[in-house]
Image (cartoon, rainbow, N blue to C red; front, side, top):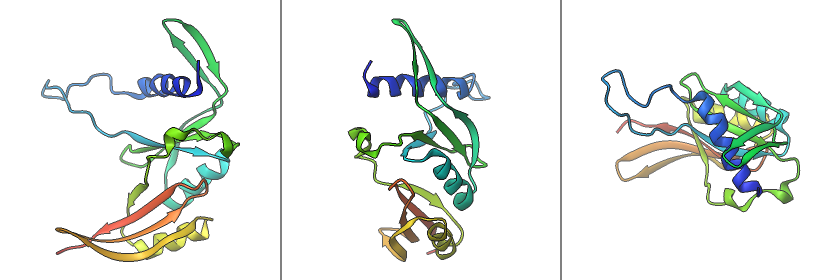
Amino acid sequence: MDWLASLAIAWWAVAASYAPSSETGADGKAQPPRLHHGAVIAENLDRSIAFYEQVFGLRVKVRWTSMQLEANDGADTLPLAGAWLEDPEGRVIELLDNANPAERPDEQEPINHIGFQVSDVPAMYKKALAAGAKSDTPPTRITAGELKAEIAFVRGLDGEKIEMFRIMAG
């Protein structure tokens, strides 16, 4: 099994254990899909967990050192460590351990950034920099059509692009 297929099966195996028991709401109607998580490949899992805990207040929901895969064609064990970090509303960032960035899979390339809505963009930007992030775009006000916001971007400890934003009135 190639790395990408293994990762896809592993993701479904872990996600299934945390999925709601029903895809229907209290009214019995089918619920639309909702975004659950984004994933970042981490060069140092412990360091990345500490960064997201310290800067964004996420907490580890589950952590693993390997994944047991079971499919119709047999079972396999992947030596893939990782963690789900969750915010108070259940949104998740999945960190996947890959100590060798040269082996980072190409399928990560289309991802542009992870966004966090915050109440104080400059303060959160400074907090991220103090925790080891690198500046990408300092706090800036933007207008895009009807949207008015204050934004800032940093590069996280694994090179991921992180946006902090605050929607501004009128």
